[in-house]
Each structure stands twice: as structure tokens, then as C-alpha cells.
Image 1 (cartoon, rainbow, N blue to C red):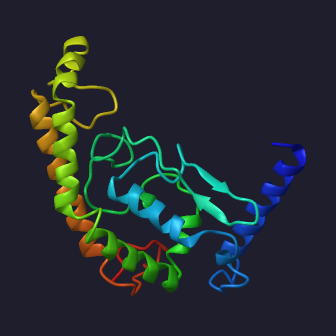
Image 2: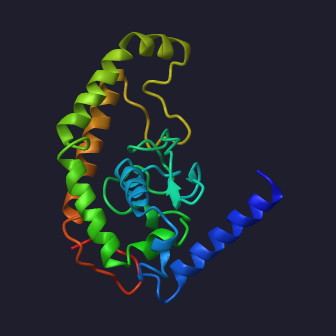
Length: 217
């Protein structure tokens, strides 16, 4: 990246944040929509919230901008501390919004204050839940992956015998078998899906005095 390119993208990011923080942030021409790919931001929100990736939104977060395009979130990355596998930032919980548990940029809370953004988010969630994020499809994918790794996991735990032990960063002592760990992960995911289904119910807002969105209904 040249010096000129770096200065240009810094200015673009500054303009985006100023528009998002400004009084006209909801305006489609003068607000944040002028600068970002809204659909990509929504997908980024959904995938990080669903799996409760504690590095999401702040660390291990990538974005890009094509020439003459808008700021686009992605690709997502670094999900080792997700799906209940973390003792940090309430990572073990299946309820609550992740964006309010760690030092996340103001972007997300501000975006959720826009009813149009929430409406798109609700619609996208409902669409994905009927397709790639359907509970049955997610559980099938876990089962297929666990089966694919069935021999490798034996070698892994022979080399690193951590089953049944407490590993730094994990919320509890590990379970004694590989299959028990898989079942626990599936249970965590089902509980998380249920909570999100209940709390992304409609685009009607419920902003509390703190300014933090607790549910979408």
C-alpha cells in the first residue's frame, strides 16, 4: 500500500465513522449507508454473535474495500474461542449480545439504533435459519466433521492428553471423552440458537436507557 493509498483509506474510515456518529446517520445518502456494504455487515454480525466469538468485532476482524466499492466486512477468522469455549468476556454463555461484553467499537451499537438496519438483520436471520443456519444442518455439519476427525482426534489426544483437564482459556475442566465434548458443543449451539431466535423476533426496537439494545422486539 502506498502512502497516498494509506492516507486515502484513513480519510474514508474517518468519514464513515463521522457519518455513523452524526445526527443524520440513518440518512441513506448522507449517513453510514454511503460508506458500507450493509448486507456484509449484517452477515458479520450474525456469524460472530451466533458462535459468540469473543475475538469478534474487535480482534481478528478483517474488512476490505474494492476500488469504487464500499467497506465490506470479512472474511471472518479465528473462532477457537467461540461456542462456549472461553472463560473470557462471558464466552461460555448462550444468552446476551456479545457486542456488549467486551471493548467493541461503537459501530455496532449505533447501527442497531437504525430500524432499517434491524429490519434487514431480522429478515436475513430468518432466511438463514431456514437454510444454512437451520438447526438440523448445523448439527449435521458438526457430526460430519466429528466423524471426519475421528481418527485424527485419537492421535491428537495421545500427543496432547488434555481431555478431562483444565486448559487455560477454557471455562471449565474438559470432559473425559471426545464424544462428550462434541455433545456439549451441540447442546451449547442449540441453546444459543434458541436464545437468538427469541431475541431477533422483529425489527421493533427496545433501546434501554443505557443505549444498548437487549432484544429486537
